[in-house]
Image (cartoon, rainbow, N blue to C red; front, top):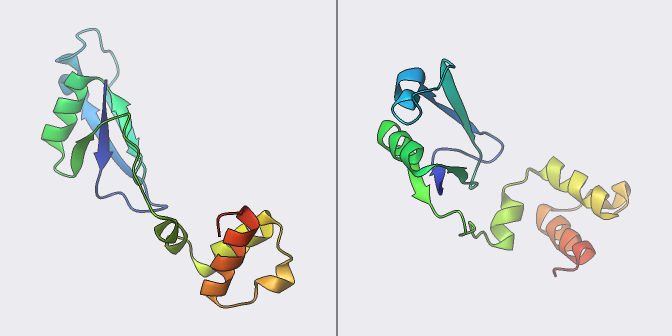
Length: 120
């Protein structure tokens, strides 16, 4: 088993790739469905068999091999930059901040969320 990741997938916007019946039958002659679908999420590798990974990577130029044991590293700043301002406000409320206190600048809101989560 090996990991495959799609470099075109964006945050909150997964991509869909597939293999046709003929392509899958090269690996598994007993395959009886029309195709097999794969949903690739941002920075999350999908674990598939090595022969299937070879076919996927050869078919789609945006797919790359990624070891299943290796985690995709993002810094804390990159993590919070992926959120919109309204999503940050919702995250702050979930973390325990009163809604009235979320009407601050983005940087201040990120600092408050880090304080509430104990990472600041």
